[in-house]
Image 1 (cartoon, rainbow, N blue to C red):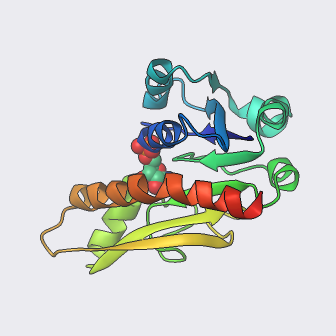
Image 2 (tube, helix red, strand yellow):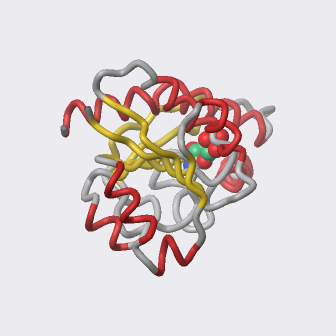
Length: 189
Ligand code: GRF
């Protein structure tokens, strides 16, 4: 059985999809969810789903090994599902090619520091893109630059608002992220 922990900073809709996808899995178990945001919607979702949630602060995450040691005791893979902080070098070294992130655009376009959530969809809209999509990738020491595992596209209409774009992206995320995680674990062990 492979153990997964999920990091989320916001609503946690992707975390919920992943938890439900692996609910009866014989391959994967979701041991814990971690958040850096005491007001995150993911906390309530985990309460309902009966998944342990850990709320941590910047010092515990970046200036000590408190969070890293907790993750090392509970995970073979680390999934970032809307997590906004940069992953420290110590995590990258400990979990080489075992940290997977989802980005709501077709990297390398619309990636990098500050490009998250509605910032991405606003930029896609401002540039009159005719398509956008999701990128699932391994995490390295630079924002959104790790090896790409999977991408999926969706077509955009001129009438689409940034909120319409966000909804189209969420549909792709819910459809593919859990499955791509499962396939990646099956492939890499
Ligand atoms: C998703 O759009 C994901 O692509 C991005 O952050 C968002 C998280 O949404 N990294 P949620 O918290 O899972 O609802």
